[in-house]
Amino acid sequence: MFLFFALLVPLPLCLGQDIESRGKSLISRYLESAEAQDREEILKALEVLGADLTKIKEWVRVGANYTPQPSGLQRKLLLIGERSFEYFV
Image (cartoon, helix red, strand yellow):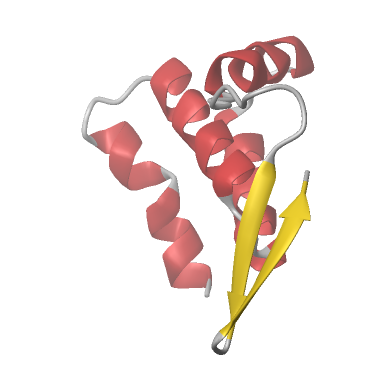
């Protein structure tokens, strides 16, 4: 686990990736991750970067790639086994 974390931060920085792009990348990964352990490691990597809260807030605003969703009532179908169920969102 430590080896993974040790490679998580320094390698991209050694390859010439600046703090700004690395921070944005980490924020995007954090927002997409569903695993608590992954999120903890990403937070540690952000801490190593030394970014302040203002910068992290900016990266969150930029990194949040939310796809537009249709508004209003949406009809959905759910297939369970061979049966189809209708529901609305």
